[in-house]
Image (cartoon, rainbow, N blue to C red; front, side, top):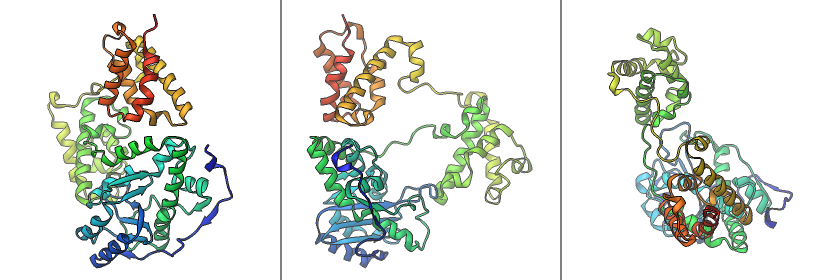
Length: 415
């Protein structure tokens, strides 16, 4: 725990000091807000509220902004999505301050809003070694204030938004700029501000993740199915649900829960009556799609055997760690040694080990990243090999500087 994190008697922050700003929902209001923000100074505090668990999309349903000298603004982006250019022209040139930026940046980018520079207070807190990095915890520990929480998981797509929710939303940016300065000061005092800057830039410039293949295999409870034909039913129902959810912009689980999909794969219904006798499918929201569900099951039933999905897919990368000892004892030993070394490095610098280096990258390095391992020559050669592999895997320079010497020493074959 840093000195700044010593517990204090937190003062409740019940409402924004300047009151809850009105929600801006017409183009002229947004343009006026942009002009006011342009007259402010310093970085811009940014937050966005989504409707995860309610909507299919990750779009922002409320945007909160605050800048010194300009005040706070709440913007409803839905009716003004095509009128945000004046706002983007002003704020896209600024440093943005967000908490857990990777959660909000994609939805904001869809609206043409993207920062020139980034400061992520949550990520900065991890690098500074804070024990708790939630926004409320950090505000309490570092600024001595207690935030009102409780509406982050609400359906922000609903309208009108309750006054209590808007108060909560405005508070999320009320102290974000002060928090940024405190975190930056702690990072600077620890010699980590440069490291943090590299991480922030990595988050800011990160490409959206490519859609994963076979996402249907993540259906909860699918591991209980033992036949490929059952997996085909899951795939068809999952795909049908996904298409309906996308078209209606509704979270897939609200159209049909995973448990119902697995139940149908087990039950193999052949008529609408049999389908509706299964759990959930007889409900009023699901009955309207009965023909779609049954058609999906029929498609799976009609597939020739050669088109059925395999019970499992080949691993893309190393196998599960609990299988290493049996399949490659030497690789298992390398991983144990590397993990121990990275654990010591984590303790030395008070940085979570997963932030020092991606655990998956360490696994890949130890499994098959060092071919001809027993024939490695000088430590310099091993060091160069490790650095090249880690860099190719996306490791940042500060991570390489810390991890490569440690991993080289740990993985150098003992004579």
